[in-house]
Amino acid sequence: MSGESGFTPEQQQYLQGFFSGLAARGQSGGGQAAMREAPPSSHALHLDAQDRVLAAGGKLVAEETAKRKKDPFQMWDEIQDNADAGRFPKGIDVFLTKFHGLFYVAPAQDSYMCRLRIPNGILNSFQMRGLADMADTLAGGYADVTTRANLQLREIGAAQAPAVLMGLADLGLTSRGSGADNIRNITGSPTAGIDPHELIDTRPLCRALHHTILNHRELYGLPRKFNAAFDGGGDIGVLEDTNDVGFVAVRVDAGHGVEPGVYFRCELGGITGHLDFARDTGLLLRPGDCVPVAVAMIRIFIKHGDRTDRRRARLKYLLDDWGFDRFIAESEAELGRALPRLPRAACVPRRAWSRQGHIGVHAQKQTGLNYIGIALPVGRMTSRQMRGLADLAQSLGSGTIRLTVWQNLLISDIPDDKIAAAKAAITALGLQWHASAIRAGMVACTGSTGCKFAASNTKGQAMVLADHLEARLQLDQPINIHLTGCHHSCAQHYIGDIGLLAAKVDRGDDAVEGYVVHVGGGAGPDGQAMAREIYPATAFDDLPPLIERMLRAYLAHRRDSTEDFRHFTRRHDIEALQRLFEAPVTLAAE
Image 1 (tube, rainbow, N blue to C red):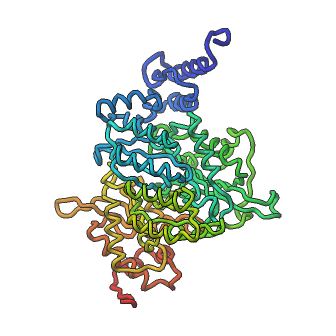
Image 2 (cartoon, rainbow, N blue to C red):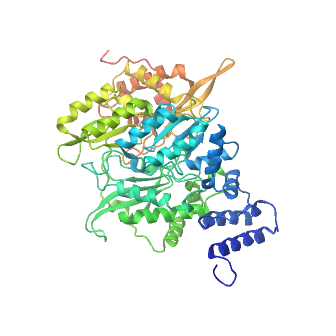
Image 3 (cartoon, helix red, strand yellow):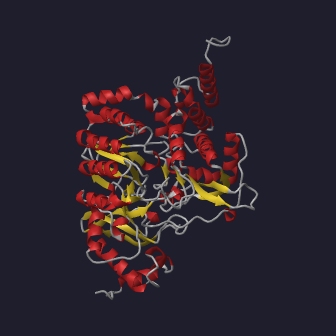
């Protein structure tokens, strides 16, 4: 006990907030304000934000009410009881269970999907081998690489959920907060620490923010999900401009009023599914400032993000309402100090990405060592392939496996004299280290076989599309074709050279799977643009020949062999492109 009241400081804080909420609502019991049971003190930030909504006469959405009534991280006994009974969660508990990284994905599959947290997308061979064992014994025998350089296990039975969570902990991994209203996997440059051209190694920063989140309960249960990324300035992009907060490494030379060196610029508000890239804030941060600044900004989002409308509950909309100046001022107040600013023009421009740097053999900064980028068929690998990759990484490299936002992976630290053996091992696994421009840039979300929102079988149809195009065309420039199953745009179709958004297409009395076709998207320092719609919903049966005609027209009418597809499409309006794409083309090589 402490103080004359006999209550602990935490109890006093709770009671003060509880009665303030009741007074603001003019209630003595009942209603949403009375749902506030004695929570741990780490809930105070969220409960105070909810109280302000209620005091102003607002109504919390169902997810906010659920978080208010029950702490998702106090559900272990429920998860265990459900497993013992062989049942999945029901109702709002489906949402709350996602806080543990467990997604009940019915009706697409009557099973769980488990999404991990792997900071900077880097794991070791021991962990990959353990995940392969878990995939075989507890899941569907495979794993998917996500567009956040992460892994998902699928087809997990109701009885297996606790074993999956415990198995991840045994491997030094976690899925805590990988779903629902939480900060998602922290992404960083996949070649961090080995890239000859990087400005800074992002691994320590990703790791620091990852563990800060894991050890601060108040950083869970945001108004909606939140993405963060660190770009170290190297050859492979991390799509930081599609994140809520992105930190971009830059070099500042002498003569600009700051000590010369490597800093980070801060970008805010990226959410391509809502047609917005992150925008530069003008802030110039030392590397050691990035994590505290990110936490301060997240706390401001927690306090003031929309809890009454899920469609507007992302950081972008708070920025739209407030403007960047106010948001930064509030973040500085939360941080307790002002942050330095520098015009972007004073920073040395970032080098262009290598659009196929994530595939094939590339020299590292360490003399005599290399990394090999391996193409996974639309991000999927079987448990046998997972074990084979773990063996390859351990026997020929340093045991390090690096996932990328392009749904593939890299094996690093391979000596020059072991490259041939590594290539042979990759081929023996049925994987590719020299994928075509078409297959190397193919990105697909889970699709209708594993997601209730998806309108098409994106992964299966991506493979059909790749087979069709590779048999008929050879491209000498990289191209990204993104297939996404619904408006959530997990595969980020708006930034694809060709972006395909799944839709149902009427064919007689039936509705068949198809896609709305977009062109000209891109992200990063030399290609940022939202793709434009060029064709309405098109049945998938008609799509491979349509995409083939588009690529044939590109090869026939581009300015020269250096012009890639996205820049070709951007210099034409939609009607002109349609005319080019519909005209018959015979290529010189034919």
